[in-house]
Length: 295
Image (cartoon, rainbow, N blue to C red; front, side, top):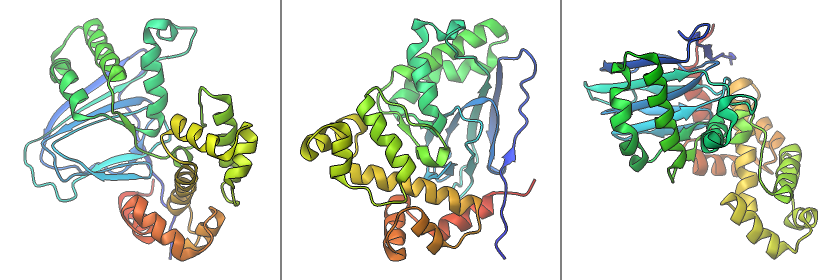
């Protein structure tokens, strides 16, 4: 019998007017189940090669260094032991609660790059090794700073440096993370909104090009320039995001999910899912069932 499971909603130690919670730990294994929480989180892990990191519908096996920023209250995440055999794992978790609205200090111009990064991190944002090494000296000493003001300013410096780095990549798909699409180009935004609304239907290049007021060839170049992906790959990723969410949150059959998410047949869905996610839809669902717990 298929049983719907729920993610643990973690109650964090931050209370009242607290700004930061910093946990710097040495550990031999990861045991905490998949969870989410209302506050933002920057999580750093070292000496944990082989650990499986799950953020939304992203599943990856990490190397010796891993740094991820998560700024969505709904995005579930977990670091699982998997094949890691290290007995000297270090994990630094910083949970924080900043108001980034334009009416507050952090809404002003000097913090613009941080605001953009925080918006991207609603899908989970993974940083490259070069960025990790740049902020490591500050991150390494963060838990030893006793004065709250200096701890906060040090952490803001970490965020600022990360916001300037190149090569950070989002983890969960926007459709899985339930994040609305935003883009500087009105034409691209119009197309993305259409795809999010009609992803279950057949979507033609000519239709999208007409919507943008461009020829199909010009639109293809324009779309890839703005998104980094061609139109077909973008549509597939959106459909897979919705499919992954249904695999996790419902007991619907895989066949029904594939058709409801716009795939023309089950074998095609299985093949595309395996190529993009590294596992079959049934394996993806089973893996999540193992990590989710009833609350």
